[in-house]
Image (cartoon, rainbow, N blue to C red; front, side):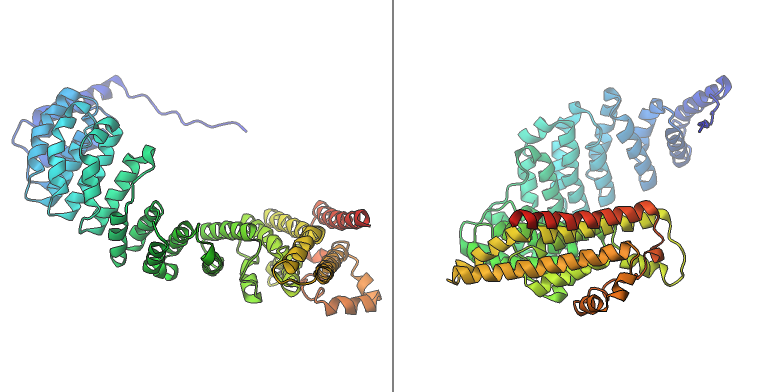
Length: 524
């Protein structure tokens, strides 16, 4: 397909001369007692067009001494842009900016301090420490916030200068500022400046001060505070419990970000406390399972990752009741990636040693619904309108993953049965033969359910529903285990799949069945 280009005309010599004359006229016009506001507006227009107006630098500096805040803002923007490119002209603005840093108007002081620290010339750094120090002590919170954030600009310009000066010590002092945003800005500035050293250092006094003001922080600030508290290592178990009690309400905070930050802090604090690991896991699971119902996909993704890590680490999900497990299940509004995560987590939970047969069966029934593309049928049924091919392909990919999950549960039950035997025999003193018998019974039950689900899917995708109609005994058997009712579609033609998609589903089912049969033959 050919590319079409839009050719823009080059400026003619006449237009270029007019532009040059315009800039020259501006420099002369600034010398006249005319309306500098309109002149500054024209300067900004030319800057926006990419035209060099640095020749008006001296005139703009003189205009910055006006009391008109609008002209000051425009002049400061000009200085911040061209101060980086001309060191000699930059020195012309130092005196004016120093004077404005002591202005009665806090807005002017803030603008002047920010511009002074944005000039981008190392040679002027020695002129910045005094106004910066006064900015830290300013009675106006906005000026103090500007002074704190200006430290980052200075660090980007000359890191060694900032680290060797008293700026870092001043920022640590600003952690105790009465304004919460100033304190949080100080934390963020220290995190940037001390990044190579691991960020801000939290000692016991800083930790106690931050927690003491817990109710003063807003949600975004609280997220930062809880994050840096993970740098602190408590000295005693009593101190750990005290910190947890002080921030415990964060688990019920309206902000989901605060809840996650509180969980992270709890995990950090309790990593060496084996006696409360079980209680901590319950608390984590309650919060994470609640997040799985969120409409924010990023939060659901993070919660699924955390839950998967918890189950893999501990070998079980403590909240394994029906209402808890249903939070793991796929939603119609989930993306394919989220559905894959949910199916993987369901597989891990179903294979865990602490879950009951009924819970495993409940998970398998959901997987059978997903594999049978029940959600796709529900989308098509109201209007009978055909979905686009991309949507159907996405449902097929999820169905394939669900079939593989069912086969994985049936195929991997043997190693988990051995783990179950060990768990039953060792802690409770149960007879080893009895525990082995219970483990084998559970393996047989789950494997049988998996094979029944796979056979039902095979019948569905083969468009051979008449097999069940002719075999009434088998049909009643499947109804008894709830296998037929769990699948929405009763005919593969209702799903509007093409031959390649049907073949993919069939081959996946057959592969899962054959894998289990091979394992049985090897065991025999």
